[in-house]
Length: 321
Image (cartoon, rainbow, N blue to C red):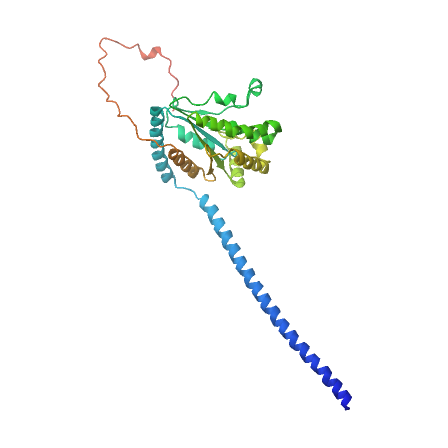
């Protein structure tokens, strides 16, 4: 082999070795890079899975049922405290407004029922207004609500309130855009005015997930004693979940004020929502136990010569049970 050929082969062999060396180094670098990326990916996936499990756990915890005996015991205790609160409101001449708003089938009515069932209706009353009349539609928007505000020694529970304008009226097109914008401007000032006048305002928003709301709608359809609760407006709201969410967020942005803040109640589990909401309501007023001493029952007086007419002269209902 000539020296020229040998030299050419020698020169050719040297670049091949260098190329192979570079390729091996590059492959090693890529393997390391891919290994790091894989490790990060696994870590991210693990973190994501952990977060997902945590969130799922939180949801399950929020929806965890409460035992009936525990619920009844705690509800009975809270209702005793509500009576104490009622006595305090009357004695101190307080004026309290509690607003219940939220999604349809969120459980507002159930909480209102448990709050009021042990209280004096002359002190604690519920206001649930129907659709405004043609005359009321021409009034100042807040006018028909003002007449239901409490006097001294009263607590009023609004089962939906002036916030209808920020919710159903806006979403369903029952008010104009200028009317809606005016409400967002004037409502905070209206509530600040009420607070300055001495009225205590407590506002609750009942939050329910879409799947739980769907379950409750379906249950109402099957129950003849509750089917009246599923109105055409409720059915329409079911199809406008996003629009109602947007309206609620806008309402909170304008009307969640320091003087009358919104309090959100997680309501996927009705019994937990009732206990939590009543507990919070009791915490909002610094009351004392003014329960009066029960009166002493004296013996009945002697009827003397009075003789009652025969029972046969009265109309009694048939006793079938």
